[in-house]
Image (cartoon, rainbow, N blue to C red; front, side, top):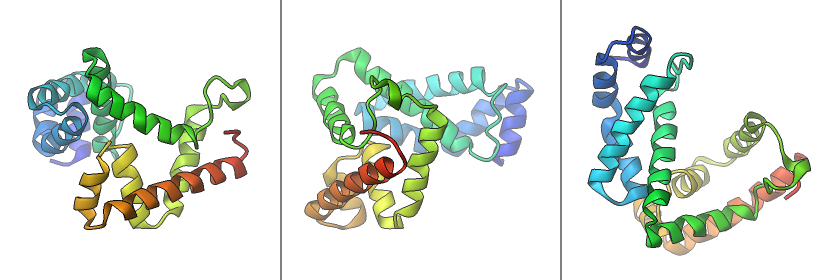
Length: 186
């Protein structure tokens, strides 16, 4: 079943929509959640919470052309919140480490001149990512969206860990320069 038909079922409030979404995207969503929470059962709970959130938010949202991205965003937020709620010290330290890496290139939210509409800023990030070659973009997204470790990215792409670290360092610098050029103060 394609995404448009699944969305139609959500709009009709037909519970089969959840079943079809689960059949189509469940494995990928659980894998995404598991990469964050590091626990199979918690990942399954996050997946179920994702379908509930989708059930409650699809009307009025209508993600016909981006259903997986819509669900992935939901499960990622739920999984991160679950980590924070459970105060998983080791995992929290990892998330803080990633946040510190990105703080160098993302505008500070406390700076009043930096407060901008989220969609405009997301558009700038997407434009930056669109300018990267596929290899760099995939490494960047695996690290900062999926929260993969350097080691797992290295294994996935068959590159040395040193190459992954260097690529990420350069991408962060390029992102910072790009955002400054676009008028964002870092």
